[in-house]
Image 1 (cartoon, protein in one colour):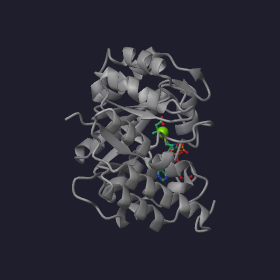
Image 2 (spheres, rainbow, N blue to C red; image 1 turned 135 degrees about the vertical axis):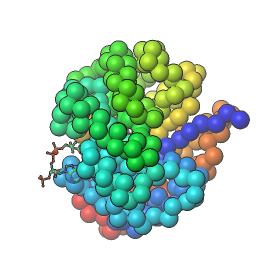
Image 3 (tube, rainbow, N blue to C red; image 1 turned 90 degrees about the vertical axis):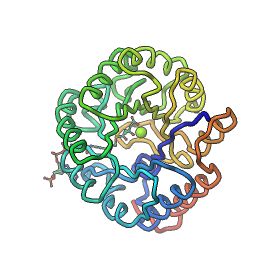
Image 4 (cartoon, protein in one colour; image 1 turned 30 degrees about the vertical axis):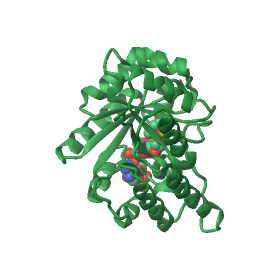
Length: 288
Ligand code: HMG
Ligand code: MG
């Protein structure tokens, strides 16, 4: 069976970029509904300074309140060792570290140059592996940087190699601004393929220009078998102006199923889960 791996990033990448600060109970209901809908990997939250992302300041509370469904990997994004400690204390199954292929985004998103960020995350990866959790390494701006413009595929390949050398389990390539087209995604993979097989990567698409599904189609022809997406297309990145909305999980699942792939996810149930959390934005229960 042709199986595709999907990581649901709505609770983290989605909610970090919504103006509303969603109450813990609504987040917990969202995450539990995603697991019930068949999502097998859920990025629950991040452990970053609340002044950077106030929307996710309650990550520990959320992780402690969700119902852990057997077989589901619950993960958190961590920028440094302090974040890792917070995530491990909540019993996460996996963590995600993040770097960027552009200097401008690296400085704006993580307050450090590309080199400084690699130096910061190296001990985090080592400590996470020693603690026995899987480590995903995101590389942002693999197509375009909101500050520096287009990114050379060779730069993406170089940063990918550096992340892999640090010992990450999964390389996750982020089209942070959603500027990718099928052709630019293919050009990026042509360079990255010199360091890692496309089939061993995850593709993280934002849908800013409605190109995410055509990019998925092209990526599938290149051998990519893992994608990130977000229920109802929640999300973006607060430090990437013009990056609203991840690829919507239900659209991805429907497109994959129509093309004969299996994702093991109930698209309608994911859409309902996304709609319910969005309702908490409007219900006057959210602030911010
Ligand atoms: P900094 O301000 O340079 O950090 O941020 P610092 O070490 O100077 O610390 C500043 C304050 O934060 C200190 O407190 C620290 O103790 C505290 P103060 O002395 O001011 O009271 N602190 C923390 N508090 C809680 N949790 C922590 C933590 N660490 C320090 N973990 C830093 C540097 C890297 C921490 C910051 O820049 C950061 O966290 N940036 C992340 C911003 C972010 O979350 N962006 C979105 C996620 S990335 C993304 O969305 C892209 C992705 O989706 C892929 C794609 O689309 O491309 C993954
Ligand atoms: Mg993202």
